Image (cartoon, rainbow, N blue to C red; front, side, top):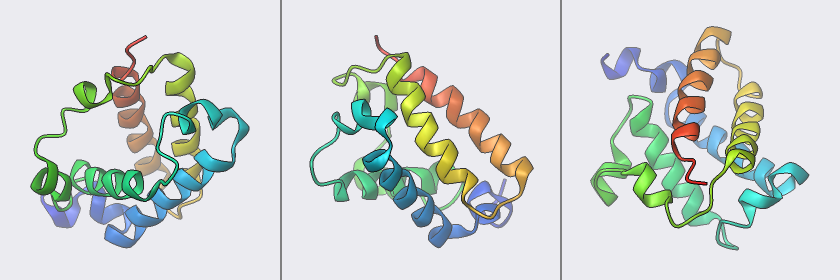
Length: 127
């Protein structure tokens, strides 16, 4: 898939990915069910927002910003220090699901992204 037909482009490019990430972290900070995963993050979420934006940009088929700055994502290895069980996975997915629902995107694209994100989030479980 080339960048022009990528999920990144279909989502709306850089601005849409930034909106998605910002809304995701806004929800993480406000939803009671996300308290547990919020506690796993630093007090200042600026770095987390930046890393997720860069990761999702490449993961969605856009610029490989994360890889250029940090190397291969090695998602599971990078998340091993944090206790991630079903509750943490589900809270993360709840925030992402709601953030995606608030974007004005094609329903089929939303479902494709949620399926992939579900698989990825489940793979992060280490408890």
